[in-house]
Length: 284
Image 1 (cartoon, rainbow, N blue to C red):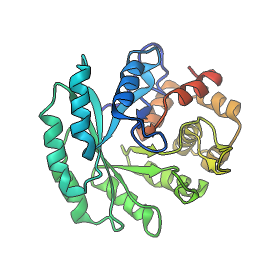
Image 2 (cartoon, rainbow, N blue to C red):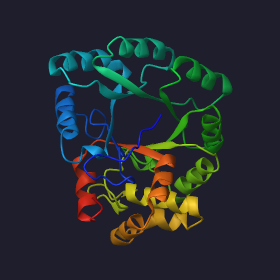
Image 3 (cartoon, rainbow, N blue to C red):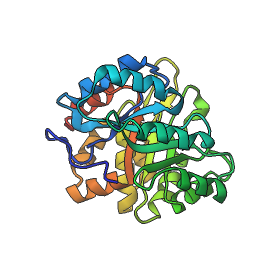
Image 4 (cartoon, rainbow, N blue to C red):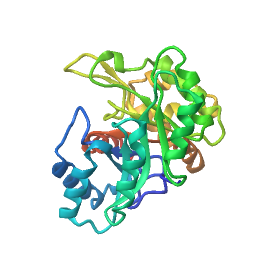
C-alpha cells in the first residue's frame, strides 16, 4: 500500500506523510476530543502533506467512534490500530473498524511481538489482518532481536523500531539502530516504521533528563547512506543539523523515494515540533 505519495502544497517526497499522529500516547496522552480536533486541523492546514495516519489503541475504539460521530468528518479518518488487547483481540477490533467505514479507514495494524517471535504467532497475525492493511510488528530489543526482525519481514510485515521512551533503557544505541537498518535494507522491498522520542529532527540531549534522543532527520539521512554504501553510524550520531539538512536536500527525487520506501513513517506525539525543525532547517 502506498503511504508516501508526493505531498500536497509542495511537501518534498522525502517528508511526505512522514509523521504519524500519536497524540493519544505518552509522553503526550491527549484526550480523545483534543487529539481529534488537532488532527483534523492539521489535516486541513498548509503542512498537511507531512501528516500520516492517526494512531489509536484497540481498547479505545468505542471512545474514538463516539467522538467521530460528533465530529462528522468529511472523509474517513486514516487509522493505525494499536493492538493493546493481545493478538486474540485483533479480529474483533478490525470488525468494529470495518463496520464504521464511513468514519474510519483502516490503513495499518501495529502490535508488539512476544519475546520469542515464532512462526505460528506471525502466521496468526497474517490470518487476522486483511491483506490490504499493513501489518507492523515490534520485536523486543535484546538477545535474538535481529533474528526477530528478519522473521517479521519474511512473513510480509513491517518491523518497528522503538527509538526512545520514558526511561533511558528504551533508547537504542547508534550501533543497534545501524544494525537494524542493515538487516531491513538487506531485504528487497522491505519497509519499517519508527516510534517514540523522534519529535525533533536532529540528535540532541533532552534538557530535562540528560538523555540523548535520536533525530528523525538523522534517521532519514542514515537510511540514504545505508542504501548508497555511506557511513550510517556517522549520520545517526551527528548533531550537525545544517550538515544533515544539506545532505537531505542533495538527495535526488528517486533517492528520496527509495529512502521513504524503506523508512515509511514514524509516530510523533506532536506535529508542531517536527514542522518547526524542518522549517528552521529550510527543508520545507
